[in-house]
Image (cartoon, rainbow, N blue to C red; front, side):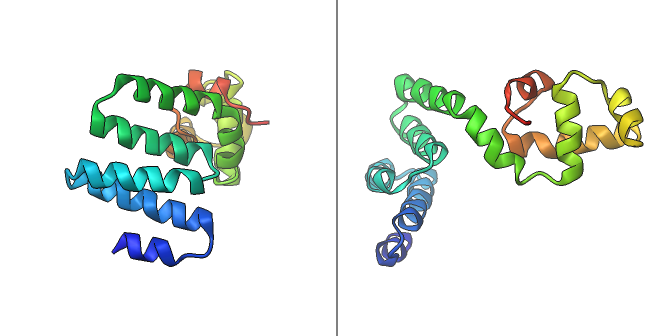
Length: 147
């Protein structure tokens, strides 16, 4: 089903995203041969390095190849700054303010005092922002370009 919809799309990046989604579905369904084939067909149509890294992770999970996993994580690390710029646009204005202050090394209490928020509200904003930025800690925030 995904494959036929992907084949009809005139936009190459849309076709690539649909093929990648189909590859993920086949991987989840434990059909590694079909998933690998669709991932290979999707890769040339995906201009986004994160989407290509995701395909590499799919292939790595299928083939259990540690080299591909390392390559994918390296690709994610190499594009962290540009991804942060793209993802920062998806943060709410309040989340972006909180994340920038946290990346600068301020505590929840200090951020709250500056923005007139409770420390718990600051923690909530960080909790919502971390997955959007693909980070898990304040230390990782400091490495992102959030200016």
